Amino acid sequence: MLAGRDKKAEEYLNYFSPEGGEKIQFNEVLRQAILEGDRQAAAGRLKELLKDERPALDIINSAVIPALDRVGKEYNKKHIFLPQLIESAEVVEKVMGKIKLN
Image (cartoon, rainbow, N blue to C red):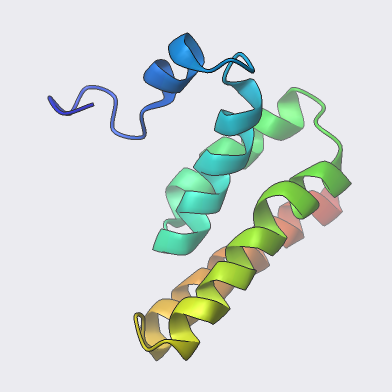
């Protein structure tokens, strides 16, 4: 992680998590991509989740809604500003569109 080889700490979480890491990775990677407004990371992770036949409702409840909630709280605290809020909303729009197509 510190050397930049495991940027989202997925390998670390998978190795050391008492839950086996899958639940943490499943939730956190997509959630973080939404928070950062990272369309590519969100699209890539969503593609993996849909390929693994993860239920759409699980994706929405475990990643999308908590990310939107946090973005709203950060915006209200003035920790992020309108451009970041819009980026996150656009990522969610793309994610929801892809979920709807499947």
